[in-house]
Length: 168
Image 1 (tube, one colour):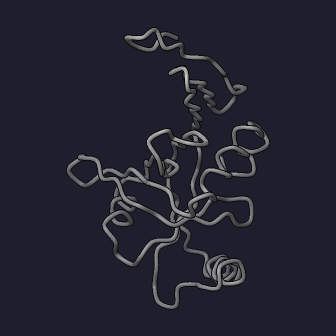
Image 2 (cartoon, rainbow, N blue to C red; image 1 turned 120 degrees about the vertical axis):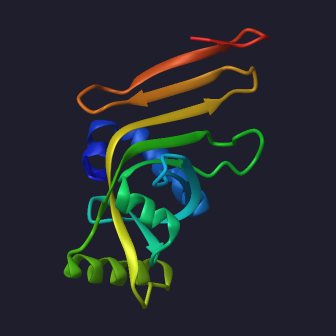
């Protein structure tokens, strides 16, 4: 499911997530190496034509991971120990974009929005979303969790802090 469809299915969750991604301008991506072990990397993103895109340096390890196994996990950058603003996570698959017209439009839009666009070869992936979650950490230790899966409305629950652990 592309970003626009996700935003239609879970508007509040998508709005929170996009705000967290855009607050820092980079996100973390979890990929799987050829041997199946995980890799976590920083990654630039851009919302364009109904999709969430990830641009990557040509032949970067994370791009090569995605070409072998497109499953990925995206997470907003946490910038302080209080996790101010919460934490947003997406699960999905990275679909390589090979349409040269779309890549050219992407580069023009990126240049207009940021003042920069890649000049040489690079990898471009659109994210096919199959799950999302938002966690808000409260001063009491409680956590508000909002989860979404395709075909169902977002589920919201409060995890209560008991002093020795969290209880759903």
